[in-house]
Image (cartoon, one colour):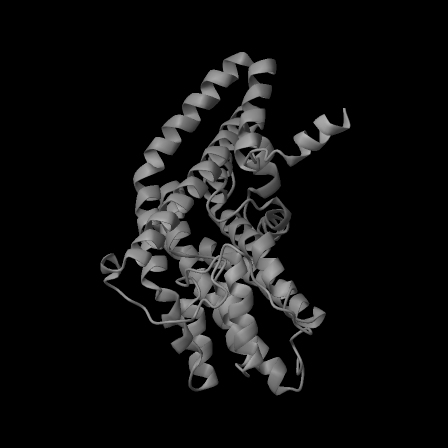
Length: 341
């Protein structure tokens, strides 16, 4: 018996992706307890994914190309020169950096270690999780280009606000030692130095970069498909089971309170920048205002687990608290501006 257990322990069991597992379990529950809704939800999910597929493919090709060319190395030039210039460029380029959540950690740690102003780093940190090329395209597919562009503008605005507020605090004598005592950070699936080397725009002449393009494309295609499938499935259940008047009563209506409430709900309710837009589209169909929707999305992006982990892993508590406060304030202000414009 002990020999059999030992052999079983040596077997390599296939890991089931938790997103697909959740998707399958939800479908099983629907089939068990509400068979008519099963057909409605599966049809809704399939149609929505197919309608979004052109956007998904474009986003996949774009991010794969950025990774294959090594375009991340271009971002290093942003953190050179005068501090105000750094803040402005960090906010502008924050959404363009093709970093995964673990690549950001050694990248930011190296910048702070060599004396890059915390203000520029904060601008980059705040803008980066709010928008990137794939999430811009996915947001446009779910909520329209006007909303997607408004979110991109909000990302830059929040980055600028965070950068200049941080500069003011540092100039006044605060946050003098932002970094925690560091150990090497990173993960096995990512480059340990995202700024190493130079960008090579004709990457198809380099077999290694072609391989990077292929692997990055397949990885991101799977990533986007699984999260969007889950998001559309949840949207179908939102429409089916939650009355529109309930949503409208919580995050509908005019004024500041629905915006603040949406920002508070958005933080813990966050999925990710790719899954959130379809859910917000469903909430807007149920009565959520544009202002509340913008606050919900922005607050959720800033408080996402990868974004929060990257900040918490590197800096002391007061810097982390400032990041959270700036993110929440920026979400509320973004909601107000979206309503006005």
